[in-house]
Image 1 (cartoon, one colour):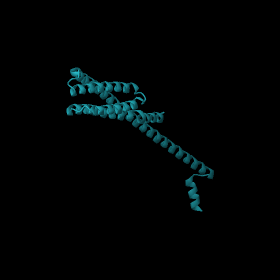
Image 2: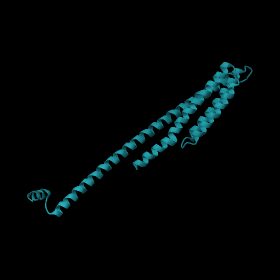
Image 3: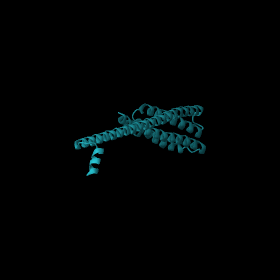
Length: 193
């Protein structure tokens, strides 16, 4: 039972928990790149950089899809994807309104961008903290399980050695009885001969 529990913990660590944490870190990098690219487009007055935002968004959506297939993370990945899409839409609209003074969105677009960015940051930071905690807990469970397995193996080895020593002692005793005397008496007899 201990071995099975430990094996399952290690398996989940390698197939779910750690890949989810790494995927979230990758998504976080893409989210930050999105923000930096939008800021760069506005700062440089280069609306063509907004096409780069769409490419980053495609990469981020691919990452979200990979997260969604990990057992138990479909809902959280969906929430992250929805929040990210809302942010990209708001950020793009805000950037376009700043790059083109004739655009009608103006102040609302900037407020929407800030609100969606804050919402996504909060959601992502919560997921990163939970995923990191999950990995740490799974590592602790695996470590405890391995320790228990080692103790069980050590106890088994001690018991086997004790049984073998007892068997050897009983065997020697049976042999000496067959010879008809105790070993000390046999030595004295052999010494006289």
